[in-house]
Length: 323
Image (cartoon, rainbow, N blue to C red):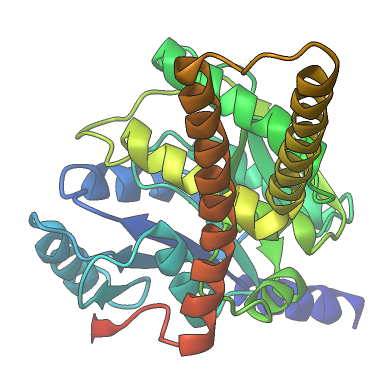
């Protein structure tokens, strides 16, 4: 009887699934390489079945054709969603989480900068050590432009000083999560999404595996410096009210300084006499104050813009094709 019980448990475990959410934008070269690399990890996944869920984020190359061919070759394991246009990686991640059906859900980049061989270790962290999330963290940025590395490190230092949600430098989106964690993330249905912050905000018991930085296996990244800069601003606005406080502080300081300067000019006129000279200095001060006002208005406008997008309640993404 004991032998039969063991067999039943093993069969039940074999039916469990790990869903891999893989956002793709102009990645026709990397998709076959990614699939082949992940298939090599199957033997170390304790009998778990891999379910591939590719998200075609409005690619302009032959990414969709590659996904169609791969799905036709492996109809039971490979699925894809194709957006009507480019909605961004955040929308792709959210769509993947909504449509993933596995017992555990992993998020990976298709360019193989996320090491597939870490997946069995991530699974062990959840099943053997009791973690809810096992993520990955780069310990270096070798091969990355120095300017990008500098501003990335600066962003993490800044966000951790002004936000109550702590984010660890070097942490990737690549992680394995339990169904409970994914359900918690899906409850945050906001339009302006910043997944790095959301993953930290939901909490749960988390562990990070470290690895050396890797280059893309093929193709070029779609993340320019400007896109990363805008993404960092989205993160600051989404998880901190400090910029609003800074704007208020700058406005109050400017007001107090102007009051003090006014009293100084009046007292100087009464005690010393003479007119105040220096049109150039006065114009410079006016320009400075005007610039501070515009800066504060820009900060407030950024928050109001996010509110505007939220209240319109537009869909985060639109699916054109699904297999």
